[in-house]
Image (cartoon, rainbow, N blue to C red):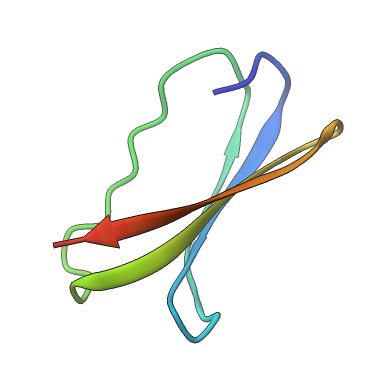
Length: 59
C-alpha cells in the first residue's frame, strides 16, 4: 500500500462493486474475496496522487 491514505475498490467484470476499503496507508491490506465467483475483477487504489488499476483473477 502507498504511504498515503487510500481507497481500495474491487469491482466485477460488469462494474458491480464487490469490496471497498479505506486504508490508512503504509501497511499490507488483505483482500478477503472468498465466496466470490471465479473470474476477472478490477482492483483500483485511489490516493490524492491518482488512481492505479490492476486486473485481479479469482480462482
